[in-house]
Each structure stands twice: as structure tokens, then as C-alpha cells.
Length: 127
Image (cartoon, rainbow, N blue to C red; front, side):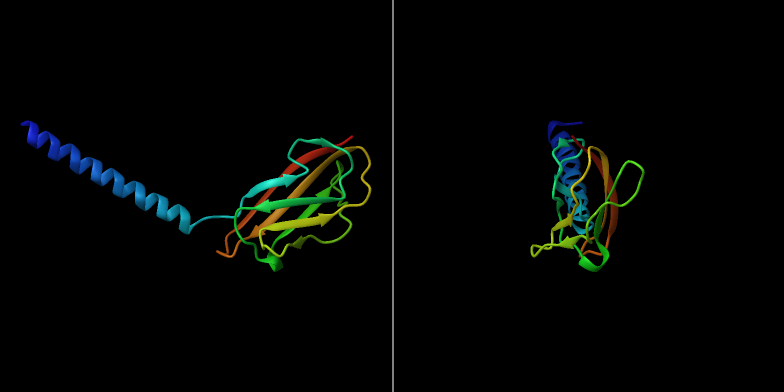
């Protein structure tokens, strides 16, 4: 194989690899889902009793189909009211009563404007 053939062969492979990478990145953007970006209280944090749980997501949410709930260690719901999607459509807040010390689980369900549904949960501890 001559040097010119070698360069053509590897140049073609590089071009093909870059094309595949571009398609992959485009498909990721097309199928983006709403993932938590920041959570207050944070996952696994030990905090004073918070007044709310606030989660900021990566994508805009459909308010009718998205919610956050908080449960105590026994699995009983403790939120003071329903969660609310903020004006930015990416933040959900749920009000809490004065929590007693213990471990709490935050459960979230989101449906982003791309109509993909995701669920998740995390824990925090009140000291």
C-alpha cells in the first residue's frame, strides 16, 4: 500500500467516524430527557428541616404529568401540598411541614415537553 493510498484509506475512516459521531450527537439531542440538574436539599445531604424541596430539571416539564412527593422512612407521604412547576417550566417545588429528624425520600416523575416520562428518587436526612 502506497503512502497516498494509506492517507486516503485513513482519511475515509476518519470521515466515516465523524459522521457516525455527528448522527449519535443529533439523536441524543432529539431524545433528550428531563434529568435533575440541582436538588435542594441535595441527595444524601443532612440538613435542618427544609420548608420545600426544589428540583431544577434539564428540560421543560409538562405540569399536568410531572410531580414531586416526599415520604418519611416508613414510606408515608409528608408533603404539605402538591408540587408546582415554576414559571421557567424547568423547576418543581413541593412545600413541606416542619419535618422531624429522620431520613426522607424524594420521588419525582417528569414528563418533558418531548413527552418522555422519567422517574427517580433520592434521600436526604433531617438532623
